[in-house]
Image 1: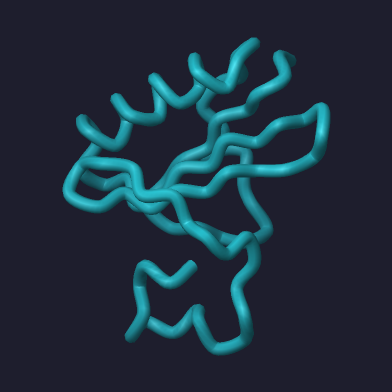
Image 2: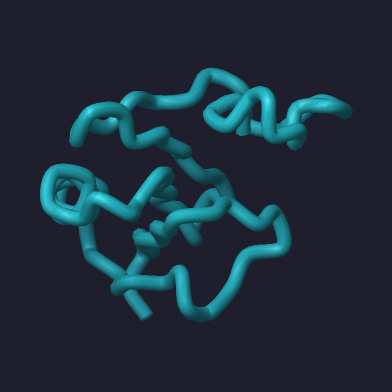
Length: 89
């Protein structure tokens, strides 16, 4: 597997899932370009994550109007999973 793993889906289940894994890439730029296309073309995708396996960190994005919007918080504080805040986490 290459350094940058791309995940996306309709529901962001914090435990993750194999079905959310799309592919891995050698560079973050490659992963981001594919993520941008997924956001633009897949109306059911609500989130995208690019995970850097080497330094064990991830950039998490919400899909808003077909575009990626990077989330500032890396974790979800208690209470943000409620349906009243669908893009909070």
